[in-house]
Length: 481
Image 1 (cartoon, one colour):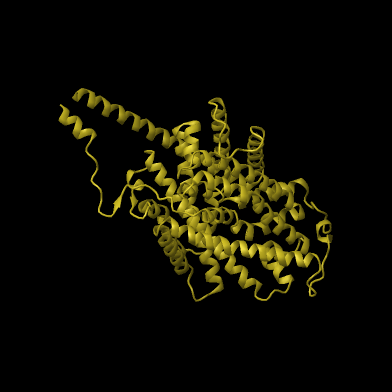
Image 2: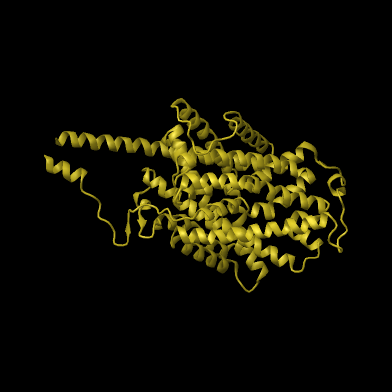
């Protein structure tokens, strides 16, 4: 009988030749994590989406950005508290599981992974569309294939190389923002002779500071809150740094005020330098300001910057998606093959699974290049609201649990707990309510919630089946004894 027991329990699976379960490597440098955290918050949402916010709210879009910025700062701080105390490649999915149970953790993990898969495809499509428009000789599908191939190779090369690649991506984006802030400030103070400084006239003229009232601010908030998506990459990447608890604390502390300066500063310059009604401001705000300053080649420079921002987001999303499905595999919520790690510390099959849909859209870009991007962007809709809600609830539960157990030595703590955590929850609820009064946002929110419920049901069924299988296995072993 002992032979049966040994066969059932102790026989290990045969390892493959080139992929073994070694575990992820903690090879990312602290500077890479900090820069990635900054870069993750500076994406196409700022370079492009800010113009759409200005179009609906006027100068009062600053209020929309302040509210959204305040919310993302609170969410990042809560996320940082949990990651610093418990770094894991599954990040908020693992924390949700510990706070609310396995179904909650698996639900947000799979929801996030699906979102990442779609975002990767959307970013590649957007970058390819801009490239094709700028260089007509390059077909959109060919540009998408090139970008997907290069960034897949980067992610398969190891976390240290991925980190270095993302470091320079982020550095270029930040350099562009700093340059824009410098030129814009010079325009406001009248230091550029070719530009007639308007002082504060554009903030109060053309219908006033809030030409569309509270409704405009609310509409702007719906647009700009999604511009901050991508900050969660920091929480996932922290597990692969040498000293995750220390490094995530540094990253969170260093980027909070910088995010606000970059976003609020950039938008303040836009609505101060040009009238909010200017058509060119809504379609390309950065280019519009630089053209007003008579910066030569402004359009070409910002085109390159936007493409870099899109590719940076693609790169980071692919990384975080592969780590999420790897974590799900470790917890029995995904196929075991996604938990296998190569000799250089990369979950290769997890990377390939996360990028597969992106390569499929290369074909779609060939067949219907004008219809792919709108469909993809509409699909990811309101996922960020669900994610941030899970983060907030998890932090409240885990922090109360830690206090009840007498653990007051957390490496990083949420400010003003529990009050600011509840403020974040209230702001998320307010954004969701606002979305219900906007046709496009309402459809996205309903689609996201429906999809979330479907994933929850699937996770419950899978969990029940796993428990039944585990129970049957134990019964077989006991019977064998």
